[in-house]
Length: 130
Image (cartoon, helix red, strand yellow):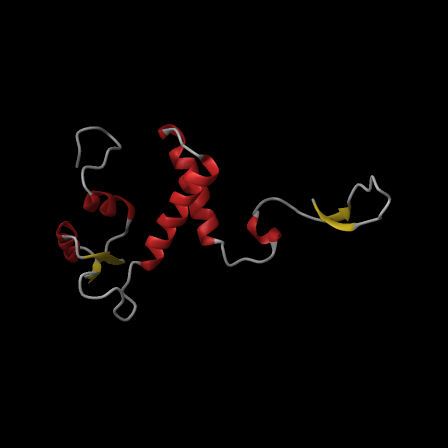
């Protein structure tokens, strides 16, 4: 791997650092990924031939990157490199919890309750999330 601590030299070096041996790894047909066969249950999808074969596809990852790019350009406008890990963590959390419907499930460690909302107009609305 690279000469600087914490700097990853190649994509496969990153995979080796982040993924446990014998784990299932699905990639596209980029040739450097071929060496992953030695350590991982590596399956390849060649996008020149097809996009899905049984459970092997990269659609989830492509969806994540698409959402991340839209968030960076639309919400954050730009991100300084030293804040990038925070944005990635937030988007990974949002992506992994996107199926949840109850807002209390999405905020672990924070206790939410229902209380009466302030009523400046006297309409007596109830049920605000706090």
